[in-house]
Amino acid sequence: MAKDSRLKRFGLKGYNKPKRTPKHKTKSHVVLAKSGAKIKLIRFGQQGVSGAGKNPKTKAQKARRRSFKARHAKGIRKGVMSGSYWANKVKW
Image (cartoon, rainbow, N blue to C red; front, side, top):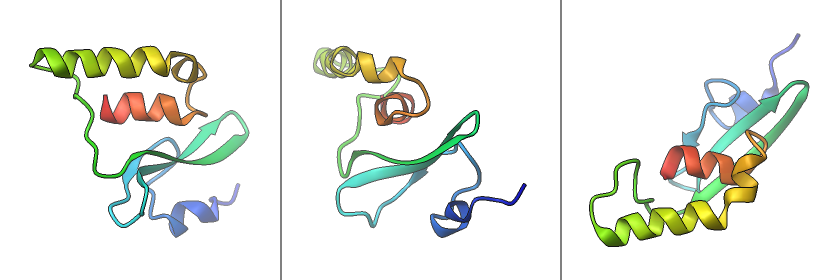
């Protein structure tokens, strides 16, 4: 099976491996998601905004993290083919 040309075009190491895109005007990351035979390019994350991280320290960070996860819960459940899943995994 031939490699997907999008891997080289976007400078990705492989499928389901997110990469920062500092020069993109709106999105902070890109990933070439693969689930079974389906392949999809997903851009996710707001440029210049960091999540609260995996271990938020302040009360405000904890509230931001909870709000994000509640707001995007449906998309996160969809799995690797959704931007919400990748934003949750990488930024939150």
